[in-house]
Length: 210
Length: 210
Image (cartoon, rainbow over all chains, first blue to last red; front, side):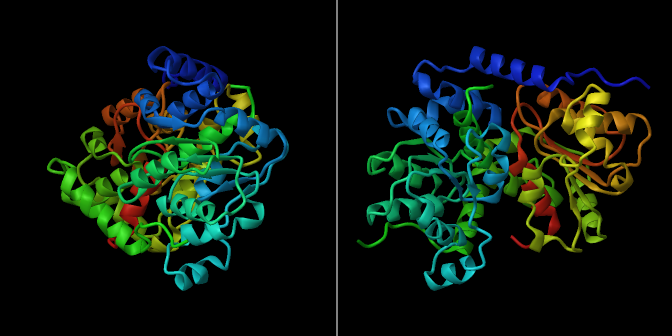
């Protein structure tokens, strides 16, 4: 039996995907330094209409690119986010850090009466200054980061806020838009989000290569 | 400064999430053995309307549960899918296998003029019989699996078909619905999908616990 008929060329799949997205998505409100990020976020979820829910601070793309080029670590709230970052795209062999599996996390979460995802954010403190933060799963991770910023914690270079779900996702992202303490951010309003979107955002800023 | 006001109890976040999904999603067309799977898939992506695009063969949920209880391996097309499977939910310490990082994959893909994701599926053959397959990223992985089944390969117990994107995702999932060779399946039509949905589907079948 001969094989089925489908596109088998990985580079061509990418090219046609990005071409389709640029044909169908309304990117008119997206600034130039976030155009590739918006395209990759759409690519990761299959939904061109997600562009309408993107929110960002001016210069967020530029800030993220500069930080990554300068070797900033990437702080991810979930292993799936860290896993989705394409290491070969990173410009400076940047560390990709997820503290969720740290042996201290369970005890810390219990002691502070919070989620493991939030407790894991407390373990970022030594690397937070100038980092690129990618939240793709837990609203409580984004909430906890905002609390740390409220308290004067070191400021990351960029917050990519893509927690997903039905409890706290929309609220935490709205809070990011309203009070990011001047930290550059990119987020998607509402319940949608996820590790694939967060990783796609990092991958878009890591290199100009598509 | 006191903290912000948000739900910090992980169990309560799950409970309220599932409650909201069951209030808002139209689950009337979902058979009983897939109700929890549908709820978890919605939970993973934040979209209740994805239920309308779910397609499945009769008894697919039962088949998947029985396979996992009997110790079937889980074959994932992407590391993010494998990573999203909650090991503590698995009923029999099931192996979770992703062959994408196998050193043979790059050469195999090049020799066969296909993607790495499709080549990685060829490395599943020894474990395919009775396995639970979870495709959450690459349409070419699902296409390749269908080709192997066309050629009389050993049959998995269940195919969870959730590849995502703009080239081949909708087409490969439609092909799964039309010619799964009698292999039980669950899929979501169209461009939507992803590693979080695929992992959520596995997690739902792994245990009755929510």
